[in-house]
Image (cartoon, rainbow, N blue to C red; front, top):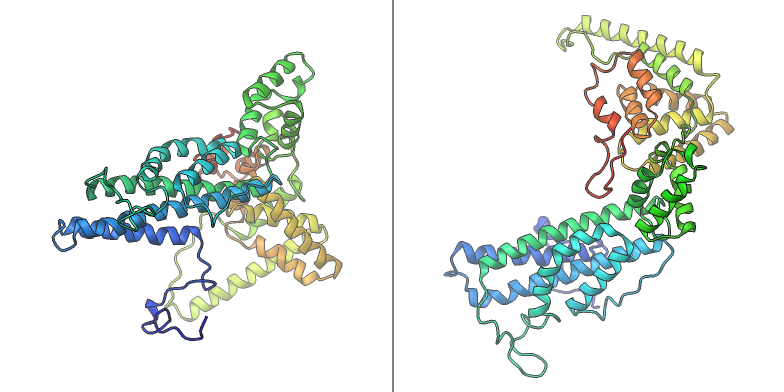
Length: 442
């Protein structure tokens, strides 16, 4: 490419420069949204002027071309995400992106592949099917609204006669909304599968359902358990090996293990470690402060009060470190950090283990280097957080450590101070019902 192009180049004003290529790295999603927005803008211009200023007979072609091309790009983007999902199962899904432009073939490939990968695609596929088939029927290859005649010199659209802009707007708005939902599902599933909670045929959602069907582990030696196993295998179309793999996943999963009577210990910390942390935390914090608002114009009085507060907090921290400093291990430090930071998302319990592993590596490095000041700093980084107990409680409930959490709530009478506790106990506050599908009741 020549060094300077007088047309496709940057210039002033700065806001008018569009980022392309490696500058922003746009993909199928960004390209498709550009074409779909162009179609919607043109439709609205025509409808706003009732076809007087902007001709319906002329603009119908760029409108429908943009609509159709946007859908093609959306489907290809979704296929690329299916390929990534399959890679998590170490399977290859092959699709010819550059050579495939027939929207009917693209749609059929997506439908067939998505249904094999995860049943959560079924409902969206059903809703998209009619609309995409409408497009495929009129313009399968992207030529109908691009040229007046086809490659064999035959005129396009001879069997259609008229296309209504208002009908187009309504239909495309519905299609866009469903394609947006498909994009959200793809994004969710990519994150879900990245955590590895699936088997050869079963998704994380399937594991959630199977966990609710399995009886308490103490009954697995009963004859009735054979019937339960057979029922599950028939329902999900799996064999004994697949069910055994699923059960192993469930037994080691913080959210699912309690369903079968398996209690998983927290990572790095015991309940006593948590009780001690919270006990000391309340020496420094008040959940509901009864202090009057500080008058910033109080001058010297304010400075004296502020200085006294600093000295008081410093003395408390010194006493706390004297009590816990010699007990702190890399595991305890990482365990407290994981409980605190996991509460930021509260989506997949697998990320709790991931967070713990990261903090444990960091803690081991500091302990090995005898970085005592850094260890103390890391402990108080969590300890001084005004939302530390709030976060830890949320994580405990999400991880189904209800006994520990309820004991803390009772000891410090937190029911009246945390309005979300009841919801947290049933998990409905944190579970994503749209795509996970099953809410585990504590």
